[in-house]
Length: 115
Image (cartoon, rainbow, N blue to C red):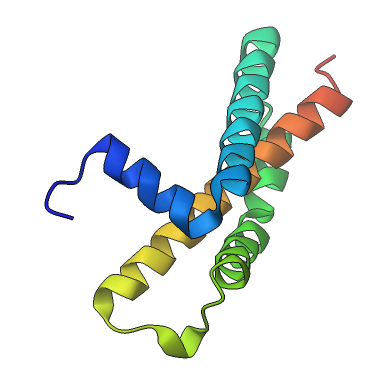
């Protein structure tokens, strides 16, 4: 892998997760993002109460994201080989935490709209 292009990264992620699971995750991410943008436009502001509850869900999302990647890739924590592996796992945890916060905020706002 000489060059890190979009096509190369796409092929790597399809190989890691499988084509079906990868594109399912992409579609879910797009739908959650669209829902979040819809909620922000509809409400014209952020509800800080809902935002706090969404932030409280972030550790759960981080743990679930790391667990999900470990299960899908058939890896174990003992397989970590060095600092770059820890950086990748921290990135996965961060993405899972942020994604969970956005998902929780969006679901709360869709279920209980602003008065």
